Length: 357
Ligand code: ATP
Image 1 (tube, rainbow, N blue to C red):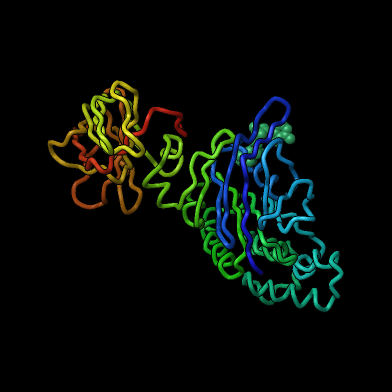
Image 2 (image 1 turned 120 degrees about the vertical axis):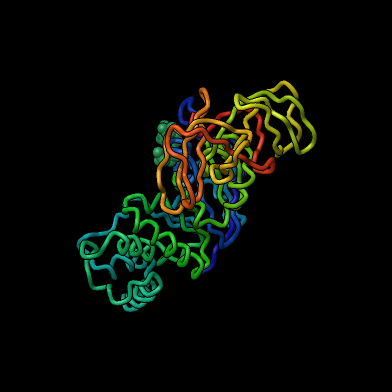
């Protein structure tokens, strides 16, 4: 099996007068694990339907392996789709489920079953072929669905929140399994999720979507460290957001007057105008307790998260969340504390929509 590239070129989708997808352009590399991450209703499923051929664009083009897919239905595209509810046939054996799509292609029975067995081995279900889907665990059924989708040798596998029905432990285990299967097959995976943990752990690259638009495309560590917009900054990982007014600005750096005083941090793209509204973004793990530091407040709550404490610190209407190591003396609720942060760990972005308004 070999993966191929997928390209969306200025794609719009409108339903009546509602624009579900607005000017989306994306390039997915052959053999890439590419995720589309965004909140409910942002257009993720519509994007998958565009690639798989269940939805035609209102404007723009979808290209797979360089070929324009206009007018080509789902079974004339080199794609396979796995839905959340796996849609396995309950009365067929696991092996027959996997071999199902091959019959329509006129492949003889013996070869169909041999291929099914090879795929079951690939997804670590050797020897389980005679069972019915109902006799398997949720994670095993998930792998049967993947084997079935891979049986028709797609160049692109499209996965629509395939882990959301599983419990937390299994979901985390399946992340590693999915990634391993993707690496072994070399098939291009396009994975839809609203769960940033899933996207961050599995993906080569991620497109973050909001309201039908792609806000940013990048490697997981890029999105986390260098979010381009307030939405990405707050949707990917936890974030403290301080709102203020730009007091001074130079290339790569700005000073912002916030309710907690003047803060100097780094800017991402260009210098924000003096007098404009801006956000100062600080990750909870970048705040540390330090006597006499600039960000002072009162501990309102503290929760143990195992290796660290989540400390909620309030000052007037402003609330900060800090992750402090679970070692030494941890301040109790009611204690006055001061938090320090390096200027490089304060990212200044122009005011805009955040994920948690
Ligand atoms: P979820 O994670 O909840 O599945 P999503 O990000 O996959 O959401 P979509 O299913 O792509 O979102 O839907 C995007 C928007 O388009 C939603 O507001 C939805 O109501 C709307 N929409 C989707 N399909 C249609 C349709 N056939 N007719 C009208 N509106 C639609």
